Figure 1: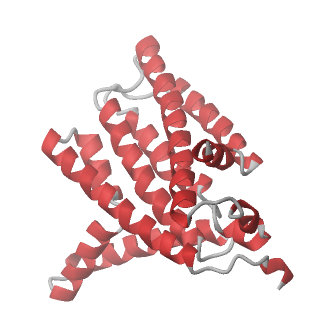
Figure 2: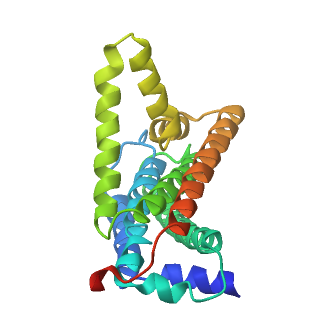
Length: 242
C-alpha cells in the first residue's frame, strides 16, 4: 500500500507533469505527420524525447522542491526509510516513461504503417536503450535535486552535461594519460548517452546490449546510493522560514 501511495504521489506531485505528458503525446503526433525519409529511424524520436528530455523535465526538483517548501517533512512523517521514498519515487517516474514511450512508439509505428514514414527496424531496440537512458538520467537528476534547490536542478543537469561533452570534445585530439583518463571518466561514469544512442541506432548485438544494460544499471545504483546517503543527512526544516 505504501509503495502504491508513493507511486501515485510521484505521478501527481505537480500539475505540470500531466501537462508535459499531454504535450509529449501531441509532439509525437506532429512528428508522425511530418514527411520522413524511409531510412530515418523513428525510434530515434523516442530515444530523444522519452529517454533524454522527459527524465530531465519530470525529475526536476523532485526532492529539492519538497525540501524548500517543507513538504518533505510531511511525506516523511509516514514510517519509511529514505531508500524507500527514493526507490518508489524512481519507480513512479519510470512508469511515466513507459507510458510516454508506449504512446510515442504506437503513434510513430501507426504513421509508418499507414504512410510509410520512416523506418521501424530498430524501434524496439531504441525503446530499450531509451528506457535505460531514462533510468540513468533520472537517478542522477533525482540525486542532484537532493542538493540543489528547485529549478536549479534542471540547469545543473543540462549545463553539466554540456560542459562535460565540451571537455570530451576538446580533449579528443590530445594523446596524454590525463586526457585519456578524463575521456574514460566522461564515457563510463556519466550517463552513457553516446553508448546507448549508438547501440540503438546501429542495431547492436545481444552481448553488446547486455553489457550496456548492466553498465546503465550499475551507474543508476551508484547515483541512487549517493542520493539516498545525501537525503539521510539533510535537514528537512522549511527553508523558506529560515
